[in-house]
Amino acid sequence: MNDKYFTHLKSVMEIVLRELPGANINRVVIALLHDVVEDIPGYSFETLFTIYGDYIANGVDSLSKKDWHDYLSEEEEIEYSNSDVSV
Image 1: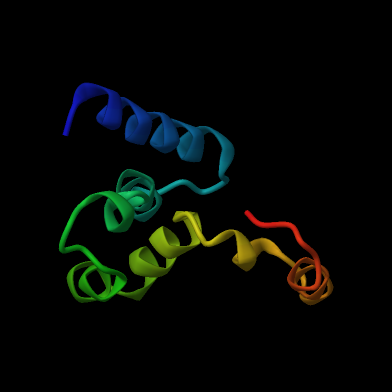
Image 2: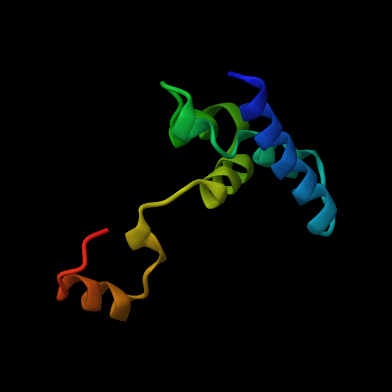
């Protein structure tokens, strides 16, 4: 890991602390781990569930990048699947 990577994690943590009401240690851990599944080989959501439990693993999952299809409504998904658009 390099300094730039840690700076990103720290920035997300600072946003969580500043913007979310009732910030606590669990939210800090979620912010710091939000990219771990994407960026660290060998880490999965199952690993996070085992180590940290449901609350943190689900929080990390909610902040982790998803496939672009995960952000589409059912109608948008149908529209894109019927078009020539490729993403």
